[in-house]
Structures are given as structure tokens and as C-alpha cells.
Image (cartoon, rainbow, N blue to C red; front, side):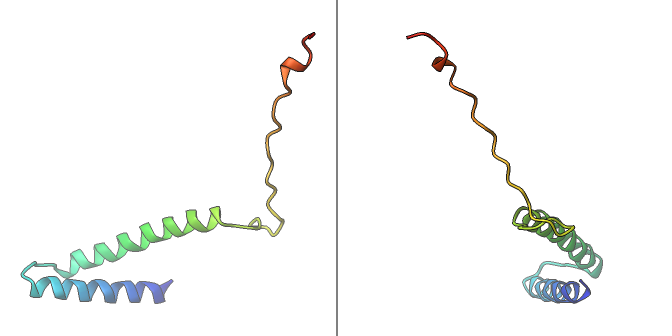
Length: 80
């Protein structure tokens, strides 16, 4: 993950520099906090997304999709 953190930090540093040129002051502490926030939120989103998209269990077995059986039609037992 350190490679991704480096890329995200570089992108945020570049964004901070562009904002500074536009007149908005962004100091290094703000940039560090922003990098940490992006990493945490990105990790949470990726974890949820890839767990939903999983085809196999973490241990290796296939996921079973169980479907609920529809309740029997109660009108079938009624005399006609």
C-alpha cells in the first residue's frame, strides 16, 4: 500500500500547489491529514466493493447463493 500512498500524496501535493497558486493556503499538515483520510476512505470503499463482488470465500470455498423458497400457495388446499 505504500506505493499507492506515495501516488496519492503526490497528487494531493500537486493539488495543494495548484490551490496555492490560485490563492488558497494549504499547509503540509492539512495535506498529510487529507492523504490519511483518502487512504482510509478508499480502503473502506475497496473492501466493501470487492467483498460484494467476491466469487469465492476468503478460505477458498465457493460462495453459495441460497434462494428463499416461496411459500406454498394457500389457496390450493381450499375446496373449489
